[in-house]
Image (tube, rainbow, N blue to C red; front, side, top):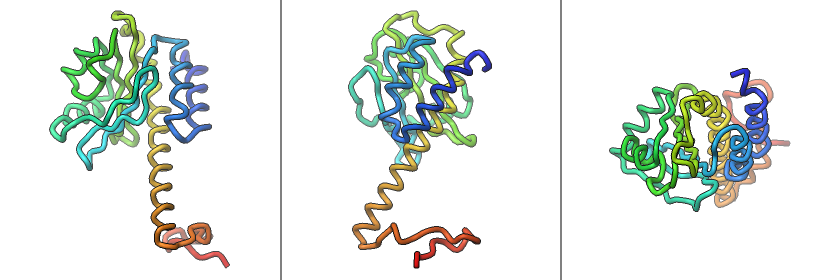
Amino acid sequence: MERFAPLLLEVWRLACREPRIALSAPAIAAVVGRRMPCDRLSIRRIDPVRGRVETLVTVGIPQSPPLSAPQALGPLLDRCRQGRPLRGTPAQLAAALPDSVPAQWPGSALVCPLSLDDAPIGLLALGSDDPRGYLPEHEPLALALGEPVAVALRNDLQLRELETLRARMRRLGIDWTRYRPHKCDHTEGPEPLR
């Protein structure tokens, strides 16, 4: 990991400066592209409640619609729990791990599972125009990228939840700016400002 420190530090900075993953992903792809092939990048969220995989951001390709049926989540969740990347042609990856990467991507692909606190949350897919683009020596860097990208994914999801909550509160006529956590005991909930 030490050899990836400068690159990972830059990825962490990019992920932390911009909480919206759609805005930080192009810069992250450019940084990764300096160290290994990265003509395309896709970040997908695994949504076990709805039983699907949702594409949150793509770089280098048009946005693809949410994919997956409930029965397809099993292999994705298993791969995330194993924590190992998978590489090959996009057609091979799509056959081995449905919804991991679009089969129509040209060249080669590398898919890295994203997990936080031992819970699978998504997939990072990198694509190269070169059919021989990803080698075994690229896998450690892909795994190292998993943590900052997973944190960025979680931050993006939390920001979306906050925006949804704010919109609901506005619809209900509640002024969310008037509430703050209690100073001494966070278990009691928000306290109105006076």
